[in-house]
Length: 328
Image (cartoon, rainbow, N blue to C red; front, side, top):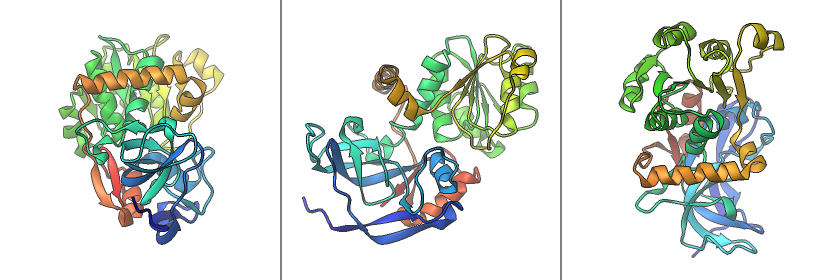
């Protein structure tokens, strides 16, 4: 299997945002190190974390210049030392550095097989969006049948997965999305869709004044306070999994006298490292959902690699729906 010396890739050149992402054509193809595999990228996933990295607001993110992207699916073409699987020719999806490229290196242990019958682009989300949604709902949010779940950014890749899973587990879903995305969210099974306004007041109205049992909070900024106010007193869980709208704060005084709720911070990367057993359980449950047909192959909107900067800008502007992919 012939591997070229150089490749096309997207390089982030500043911390001023995705507008400073450039297509380069002479990047050296990386070599897999010990415990790593090299894949020929078939499709790369676009995530809001890519936008955060481009602005320098992602904690521990790379410093420019760097090859952008971190999620990709493709064919294994070379193995590093001490790799026993996957083997060359296998199709896998995983997370590494420099996914917006024709080739990238993945940790062999974290390379998940693309499900049989799925294309590489359909597998995007299996290692980022879907486990994020499932972990937030189940081991962290503790959702059970009959409870109410409030899901922000419900039309996005993680939000859509969360709506589907929450309905499967018997919850009533109150989703938040832009008005032009309501039909998409309702088609997934959401019971109610809010388009802004006084979110907390609407949630309290819809729940007879009790509030949501679980809130998936990815909005941040000024919406964070509304998420706290929308949660059920004492037993409500607010799982914070994103800061798309900027930082927000809460004081101990507010927790005692205003928002008596459980606030749970969630970062998928930290979960994998600090609680691998929990992550393993999440991935096992995810596989069962796929086998049962609860989760169908993804249907990302695909763009050419060269359109990466424009695609990230549209994601940042909340102008996209569902999973986005770049094709090298």
